[in-house]
Structures are given as structure tokens and as C-alpha cells.
Image 1 (tube, rainbow, N blue to C red):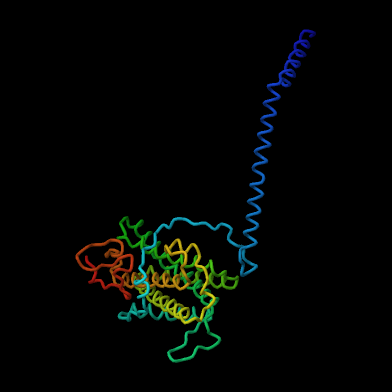
Image 2: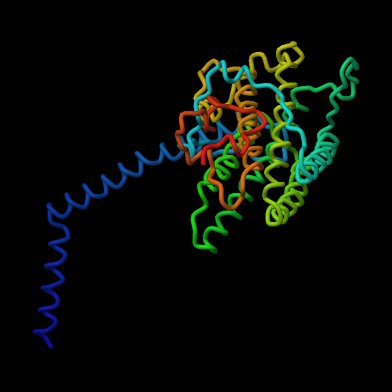
Length: 349
């Protein structure tokens, strides 16, 4: 027993000597110093970030106390790069209307007139008739225009996604290709959402507007889904007429800007998300932005009126699957733009 305790005592003494040796002290001190230095270096960064975040939140404009500003303001490369429009092509866009020729066309036109009436009522809009003075209650202000745009784009982004999804499921279920319709429909939905995201940088809808959007989208989504299952041709004609109305709306806004009725927009900065998406210059104006968006809507009008003229099960998408026969053919840009769509016999087989 005495030998055992002596051995244990010697071992403990050895450990104490080892732990208090100069090299151990130096290593321990160095490690502690490095740890303290690391913490000291990191702490101001964390505090600085918190301060910057707080500073950014304080300086973020808020039109409603009910809304929390977007702290994650980031940009990503677009899945579908936007085609390049020339200034001449954009400025030549005009309102156009395709006459209803078939029963399907007439049903689509009647539906869009009903939707237009509801849309005007919800956004407080009434455009005066020719030679009729505008009533003061319906004079469009920047706030009213943005409210109308947000409502319009939140609905306009539905058809492309619904049509693309249904055709995607058909392709999976029937084990066959879709002849490139899906890509164009999804790209259309993506483009409409970019319009919405741009306007949301300029306007923050309140709870009442959000509630209206929720109800409108819920009703419209289900109705359009059911209608597309029954008659996709009618649905594409409907969207073509919807885009006609969008072109008309944006044209009227451009006329108001040029007439000096919206002075608040003269020096308003275009959101960065729009500059990146449309490849706009740093000096882009609100008029430039509306011109680009109107051109997009005119393109959607052309695409959907063309789709409404095609055989939904057999014909290819001429905007994606191109065949060169020496004649002008549909394109993704505005180089061969036809405002009321291409007829089936104009597209090479």
C-alpha cells in the first residue's frame, strides 16, 4: 500500500510539473491569446453587421406600418434571359384587336369583357370615352396606376403557369413530347412575375389590396384550370384578348406621362431589378420602363393569339421550334411581330 501511494504521489507530482512547464505555459497562453484575438476580431464585425442592418431598416421607405421591408434584396441570373428589343420596335407598338370569328373566340371575348369590368371596378379605373372629359373621381394618379399594374400583373402571371403545368402533366402521362409549348408558357409566366416584382419596388399594397388579390387569384386560377382542361384553344384566345387590354392600359399610361400628368415620375429612379432584367441603362426613366413592359404584353398577345389558331395536340410551337422555309416566321423577339397573331397557314409545317 505504501508503495502504491508513493507511486501515485510521484505521478501526480510529475503531472503538476508538466502542466506548469514553460513550454506548456507558453502554448496555453498562445492558444488563449489567439482565441481572444479571434473573438475580438469577430465581435466588431457582428456588431457592425447588426448596425448596418438596423441602419438599412431605418432608411427603408415604408408606405404601410403593417409591412416589413424586404431585407434580402438580392439578384439572380434569369432562367429565361429577356430578348433584346430595339427602341424602334418598342416605340412602334400600338393597340390592336383581333375580331372574334368563331364561337370559341366570342366566348373568350365575352369573358374578358366581364373580367375587365370587374378589374376596373376593383382598381377604381374608368377611362373616358372619345371627346368626353375625364371625371375628377377617375383621374389616374401614380398611386392609382401602380395599384392597377400590381393587380393586373398578379393575375396575368397565372395563365402561362397553369397552361404549362397542364401540358407538362399531359406529356408525363401520355409519354410523349410537347412540341416545345411548355417552355414558352412558363417563360410567359416568369416574365409577368418580373413585371409584378418591379412594380412592388415602387408600391407596397396594403392588407385590403392583398386580400383582394388573394380572392381574385383563387377564383381565377381554378376557373382557368378547369377551362384549359376543356378547351385550351379558347383559353389562349382569352389570354390574347387579355393582353390586348394590357397593351391598351400601358399605352394610356404612357400618354399620361408624355402629357405631363404624372410629374412625380419625371425623376423617379427605375428599380435595379428592372435595369438588370431588361438590360436598361442607368438613366432609364419610368416611361422607358412602361414601354418595355408594354412591348412584353404585346408579345404575349401575339403568342397566345397564334396558339389559339393552332391544333393544340399536333402543331409545334413556332416561337421555339423554328423551320426556315425562306419566309418570315414567328420569333421570340419583335423582329417579325404580328399584333393579332399568326394564322396556321402562315406557319411552315
